[in-house]
Amino acid sequence: MPLSAEDLARLYAVPPAEFVRERDAAAKRLREAGNAAAAVAIKALRRPPVTVWAINRLAQERPAEIAALIDAGEALEKAQALALAGQAGDALREATRRERECLTRLVSAVEALLTAAGHAESPATRREIQQTLHAAATGDEGVRIQLRTGTLPRALEPPTAFRAPEGLPVPKTVVGDQHSEQARLREAKQTAERLAREAERAAAELGRLEARLAAAKAEVDRLTEEVRRAQKDARDARTRAQKAERELAALTRA
Image 1 (cartoon, one colour):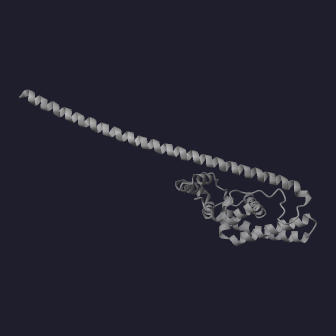
Image 2: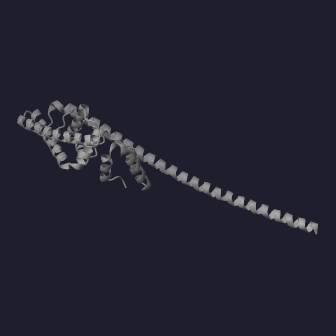
Image 3: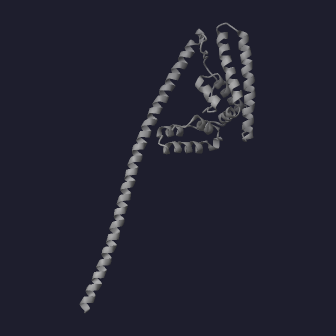
């Protein structure tokens, strides 16, 4: 069976120093359970940076605060769409303030987690935490789910293109960016599908090689047993020959 969402969340919550060991153990369990494709996929996961580890931990320990940030991110998106359409400038200021307050609380909480784990604070670390939280809260639904479940795989950059919420008009000034973003998403989807096919082929080849290895081991065991029996037969034959020689010598003397 594939790795469950709970197992994936636990994997991303382990300290970075333990990630590779836990990942490899999960891949081994999947492989032994007969799910080679899932084992290959899990083995391909990379250890997230320490800032992302802390964000994932916080998401699992304080889900209500993460949910509040995501709600603020969605409200900010809607306010941006209205502002670009020439409406509701006050709503944009309020949504920006609300999201900034959520970010401030969460960035401080993530930094506290890092400090407790022995990691030093720095302006670069704080910036990466803030950018990742903001990008995830205002990103697409898949990234928001990763933030909500504490399974972000990497740090995120601030959004470079406006993404209008569903149901709101897309301003003409951002249509080109939207098309470019859609092209990147299509390319990413095609790449993911290609990698999945490659993983399936690799898993099938692994199965064939494992079957050949098992057959070769069985043949080695069979030949080893034949050699053992032949050696025993040779020893028995030498013993009988020596006995016959002694009996012949005794008869000759008589």
